[in-house]
Image 1: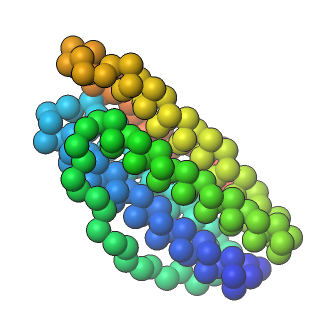
Image 2 (image 1 turned 135 degrees about the vertical axis):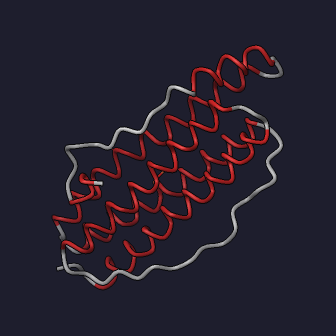
Length: 176
Ligand code: FEO
């Protein structure tokens, strides 16, 4: 059985994952305005990832008979000035997510809650990938600089990103 402290912290994380999706929707809107459709696709996929993360926590709470409480969140930033600014903000956001997942893991460890530890280990690994994705994009955008032809090629490349739901993960989130 989940401790009340962990139940609340996972509920907060469900909210934060949906908040992440909303932040990325505002980023998608920036690229839609620039007609950079590969970047638009990148963020559409990212939003699917965040919804998947939220569902995974949601399904886990449901499976273990915990209470689920849905809350709102603040407006996301809507005034980005460049692709690089967008991706630097996204990386900063993912670093916050990572520290939140680490905090959840600390609570689960203190509780000796082995089921939650197994779930959270998946998220620990996922955050390594999440940060790597944005880090790579930042490095590429720095190399592109002010070269519109290179930006066009990178946009083409990002149009091939697709969302593939993981199949071998703990909790019912695998069915999402
Ligand atoms: Fe749900 Fe991008 O971490």
